[in-house]
Image (cartoon, rainbow, N blue to C red; front, side, top):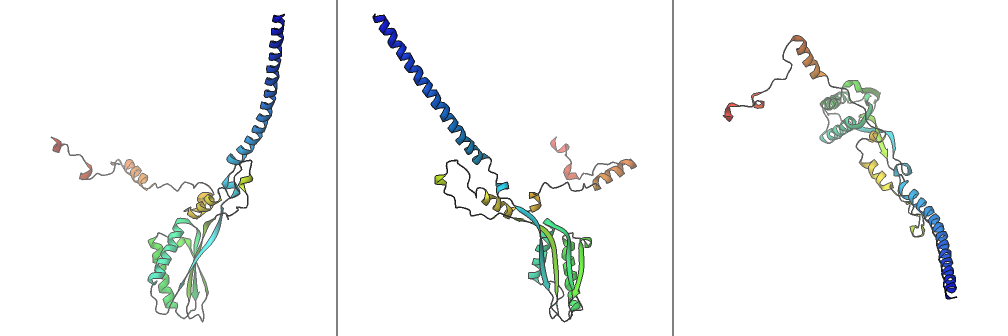
Length: 244
């Protein structure tokens, strides 16, 4: 009789444990589904946010221009204007596109001074290895102008950063751990302001033409049967006698 009672209690205990296990299993499955949904949103917010897509940098061509006033007795550029012209031409060397456009006054009162100042501008171009083949010259009527002006301009690429400042969302009530609307905007704006050549944001640069001058010299000496190696000075040679 005692044995039957013990077996009955053991059976009831097993049923209770089994019931508790089943309930725990269902709760775990529901909780797992909830965690999966939250983690999916979390994953989408933290990993798939791309600042380059959400806050793109716009690269476009822009015009850079300066004006050089010419006075009656000018024979060259004034010191301040000389620095401005040099900076202008330096920027062209770094990232200019197309030709440099020079617009000259014609039939002005100070035509002699205009020619002198133009000569000085051309000297600055030569100093920076800017040849006349990439300079286009046009003229405008300067008749009656008391102070004729030489205009210089060219096109270049400019990077325009995104506008930031969208802080209208309250992240205390955010349950999905999503990034803010302005996430990465400041970085994109700083990059647009700092990049040296905005064309680099559009893609990698191509290869520059090879310099074959040395190869041509070596090949010419090889054909003639001469020594093709470069001559060495005494400073480049090792004096083995001094070690003895």
